[in-house]
Amino acid sequence: MGAEEGETRQASDKPTQVAISKDQFIAWKRQKDAELSAKQAEAARKREEDIASGRIQMNGRELFLHEPWVFDDTHH
Image (tube, rainbow, N blue to C red; front, side, top):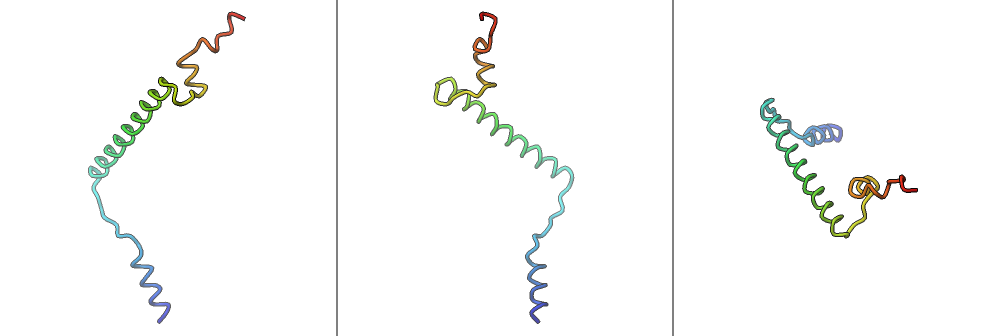
């Protein structure tokens, strides 16, 4: 009896699968990609504002992009 109950519990714990069409998947994937790119663009915009205001430090790449004269050794 105990083994049978365990087997039925395991079977009921599995998530049910819902079949979706290829078009539904592509639409979902495009929506997720758009949400992700919007979130990344917002984070980049906020970081640019924070750098411009001096609230956070720039990393090396950002320093090179914004102030390349710092890396110019021609005057030495």
